[in-house]
Length: 173
Image (cartoon, rainbow, N blue to C red; front, side, top):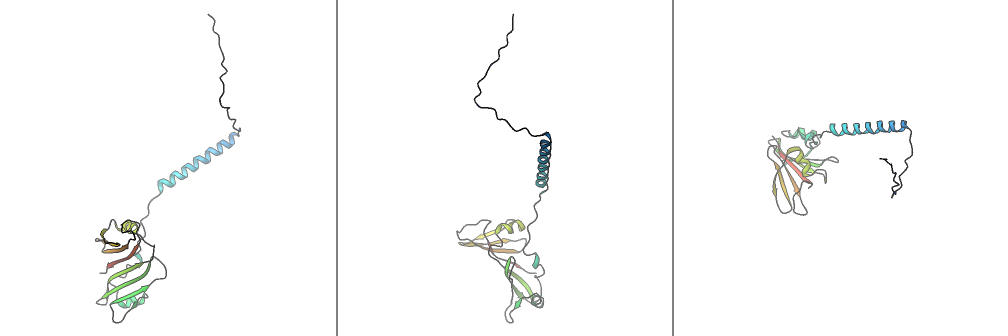
């Protein structure tokens, strides 16, 4: 029995592409580059950590319980016959701070937030989910464990965490 080998000429529907032959040195350098790039990106992703958001009130922790003379030394304008002192700010998160005085000490503090500087989500990241009292065009947000409350206004009558904060207040000690 005789074995015959037959070769087939299969029709080629698409011609094979010819790639330029690059030296082995190029492929070696290229593979090392890609490997290092992957390692750098991988390490960056794995070591990324979420920093705690900045507390906008942290610069004012000395206000609760402060005396009128301490407020005046910090630049507050205090009315002689009214129980309030006000500080206007040119830059930063707040445009003004108003404090209520009782027995020559700060009893409560109100911060007027500069337009677009803070939203509900920023404060929720700091202090958790607020208790919400919603009205027709805005609402009051409260964090009872901190003694802090905030006011928001809404043009579409709906609550969301992107709403800008209008003002923040808390009771002093």
